[in-house]
Image 1 (cartoon, rainbow, N blue to C red):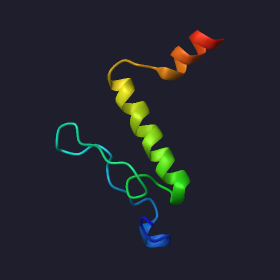
Image 2: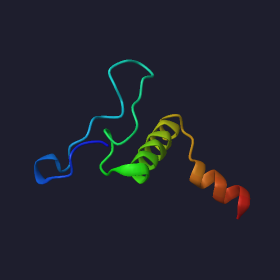
Image 3: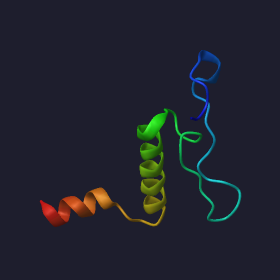
Image 4: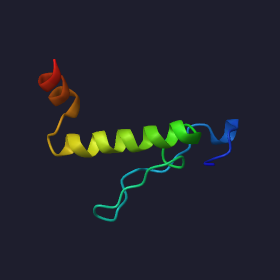
Length: 67
């Protein structure tokens, strides 16, 4: 369920990038929000960040290919 939704836990989350090489976290505990939407957003933003670090911009590539 993630952190309790109250004022003392507002904005509290773990970092997605760990000190262990190539170990990343996603889910309700690492992204502000809760439920399925929070988990999905966590994975989306982690993937987007990892791709960006490798010089890959899927949004740009999608637009160039389909538009």
